[in-house]
Image (cartoon, rainbow, N blue to C red):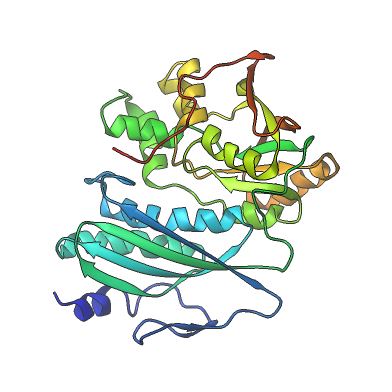
Length: 321
């Protein structure tokens, strides 16, 4: 199948359509309209087979994750996603595989009202690059550098599930039944917390998404904000699937160091804590307070029942299989 035949069959006339896209796929460039009184947020991520996803991962999950990780970056900035561009590198054209791939792609873009507006296709090792763009009202963008000592530290959802799911797929962890399905699906199909990002953008003082594990990604906030943090590991939100599959200590280790959860870590001042619950009410996502920021620049102190806790993995997750 030739390049333009592939584009025409799978990408030109499918997916969500937005009124702010003047020209989409089919010309040398896409043309879009940025709404008045909005800033444009832009992010790009590349996912490579064998590095960012398993080589035998289902095609639908590969597409879903490729989009989700980019939308998660927008969510961490408080942006509302609008458009994506997709570049595909494939060793060969497998039509059945591509059918499943576009199914996952359009399932997620339709849900978040995002339009595919362009990209590229090449023959080569399997890899996918997405550039995602979204809108933020001026002055309301979330960053890593706005936290202050005394701010409270929150995390959305549950932690460690995706890492356990990966270990199951790699035969490093033996789990059966419903818990196995839940954990594997959390690895294959992460949920970008877009609604939370927009809900907290005038409340949170800093934010980042968890791609490389809580320890690693929280460290970016601490470095950028010149703060330290006390994290109480017994407060980490853990799913029933994870706690039924591993020991309590293993669950804490997954929550601290495993990657690919794509939950949000954010900080809130004491004055805004009362507004947080109201702001999150419409998202149906729970946020758990796991600690507080300190003035000890860059120092992360892990505590368990107010005693020092030393994790097995102190550096977080690295994307390599």
